Length: 504
Image (cartoon, rainbow, N blue to C red; front, side, top):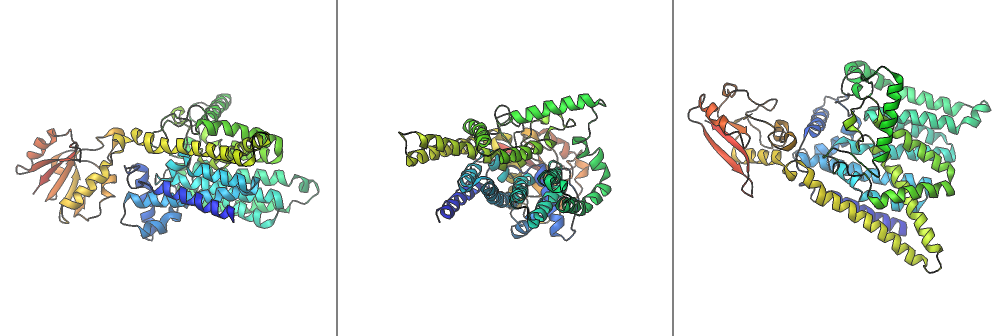
């Protein structure tokens, strides 16, 4: 009963921090969200797409389609809500994973820490598809751990299905079936010696069957998987020397390992650039947890370390640009297993404190609660105070601001053009970000490019959106439309967000 109550309270806290100011932070709709939107719209329009759109595959988009349908008019918010829902499912899966590995206490501690972890929280609220990866790795891990304990056919089957889904999610999850087959082989080595190989053969057959649609996707998108967006992350063109590639892989793997304690992801969208992916206390507890598990249960230490270590391999590919390593999005699959080790570190601290004669169990529990509170506070502070400062223009959602303005001030018979683009920090706002967040229909919205000259504004009445520093364009457009009028649009603080060129 106590466990259920604690779990309910944890999930209430996790849900609260994920929905708090969700419509505001993060603010700007960016390119990856356009990709998610376009894929989901194809699904909702009955086209049943089944392909890779740059890096993401179909799994996430089909999973969130019911949410997107229910909230179809909510713009960016619906995708953020969808990613929150997937993140909550992931936390639930992580609870069962850690519980089956080590017990209820560790499971509760793990989900508390993940619920308030900056790394998990930032992807939970971003609206992008990487948040499905911890959910999948936790489910896959759960069934493979269950299989090591029971060696039942149902765990073998469900483990194979969950591993195969990695083929349809992201390039970094392509390794799930490999991990699955290697672990099944290792678990059944004794049976192989006795001539009983049915489970291993079944595992191979499962992966082959569930891989058939994947091979069809590769055939249809050959360019993408060879030298396109996915292929260029797998096949290196830097050197034909295998020893150089091995040396590069080792260097990349070492840098990736150091991201937990020293230098993290440099991408502002998913991290405070170069901030370690774990706070300092969690980093210490991670090491303690590994040492504690070495003393207490070497079998599961080796198993979890193997899964964790192999999951980091795709993010260390020699083909990946050096500036993209380390990457929190390519390594996000390790989150369930990292926080299992951190929970083990907390358990060791509890046992150590309670073994001291001067401290009883109640005091020890209080100290552990303080540790978790400090970790949670540190991560929440990083997200809500520090993270907005590194987002474009201090998290100014100019795309939504412009979309709302166009909805309120211009009617259905108007055409919308973009005379300039991406004038803010990091190329914001994008024309697609404005168009996809507009709720009121217009006669025409030319969002695929911004105009090279006034001649392209061929359907009036129209409004041309230009940047705050592009006032010189007004006179160029006056050559085509002598009676135009222009207006600067300000935010609440009196800052010019954009200008309009109004053509009647």
